[in-house]
Every structure is written in structure tokens, then in C-alpha cells.
Amino acid sequence: MRIAICDDEKNIRELIGNKITKQYPEAEIVFFSSGEELLLSNWQMDILFLDIQMSGRNGMEIAKELRLKDKNMIIIFVTAVEEYVFHAFDVGAFHYIVKPIDDTKFTDVLHRAAEELNSQKLNRKESEEKYLMIHNGGVHTKVAIEDIVYAEVFNRKVVIHKTDETMEYYGKMSALEAMAGDSFFRPHRAYLINFKYVEKYDANTIYLEKGSVLMAKQKYPEFVKKYMKYIQKRG
Image (cartoon, rainbow, N blue to C red; front, top):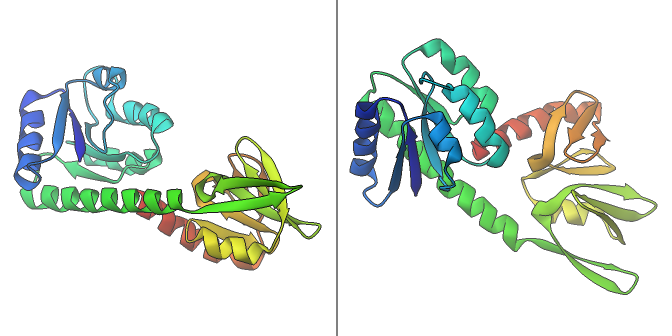
């Protein structure tokens, strides 16, 4: 487990580091004294404790840039001003901790973050192990399920849309849906989407990283429920 701590107060950095070491002695911990220093680092972190109010650029700005590079990083904000936390979830924060740091609260959030990290790793492993073998025109193509942005039914064929290419094959959408698992959802009988690539949505349309698909009205409540569960699970 690789954990970064970014705070412009040395005593806070050391305090958080000591609390982590007590719970997870094997954890790799790196300290940063500013957001700028953190952005310049190439160190790959699993969990980040990030102060919001720092000299220079604040934690919210830093988190927005980090999210462009890593959507899975578990970000935990540390702040002395509670009203900032209402903006925390705009950058996909996992949780927040208010200064002065309460031992019980910190331990609870840290353990939950560790559980989320393990869940992410397990999900990625399962996704990497799933692939579809497409047969078309005498060519056999292996497609990783997690690379599918969405699929659609067209003229008795299933059309697979990836970020970089589109391919098709004769088959049943129901079979692909069963194979894809909980990270996918069928918002309309003609479409199957990957939650990973959803950018925005409304009651009629889901906008993906590549293209958009229709939302059946009766499917909207179920979509929202499952998408929120997916987001929560991914942190």
C-alpha cells in the first residue's frame, strides 16, 4: 500500500504518518510539503491525504489535476474548515478528515480506504481476466471487456465500440451482458454501456467518452441506483 501525505505543516504530515504506521507498518509513505511538489512527483500512490488550505495552490485545485491522470486514486481531504468538504466530492474524494484529527475517525477512514483499495485491485484483476473473442470474416480478435465503451445491436449483429476502434460480430447482446458483469448496464434494449466511460447523463441520454446512447424511461431509476453504487465502490 503506497500512501502520500501532502500538507504544508510538518507536524501534521508527521502526525498522519505516525497514525498510518501504527495501523499499517508495511505501508510505503511519502511526504509532500506543497501541492506543486506533489504534481511534479512521478511517485505512484494508492491513497493520498491532501490538505485543502495550503500556501500556493490549494488542495482542491491539486486534486482536479491529479484526477486527470488517475481516476482510481483514493483521495482523503484533511481540512480545518468544514465548509470546504461540500466541494470534495466534485473531484471524487473518498472521504475527508477535519482538523484537529480525531484518532477514532482517522482509523475508521483509513481502514475503509484500505478496504476500497483491495476492492479496486480485485475488480481490476477480474476485469483483466475477462475478454471476448470476436470472429468476423475469418479473423479472430481478442477484446478485453473493460476496454468496451458500449455495445449496440444493429442488423442482427453486436457492434462493439472501443475508444480507438469499432468492430462487429454475430451474437446476442444478452450473452455479452452476462459476461460483462456489474460494471456494465443495459439502459435500452439496443445498448449496453460501461459505467467506466460515462461522462454525464439525463433521463433520456447517456453521454460516454465516445458517443452517446438512448436511455429508456423505465430504466432511468435503476441506472441511477446502479451507477451511484458503482461510483461509491470505485471511490
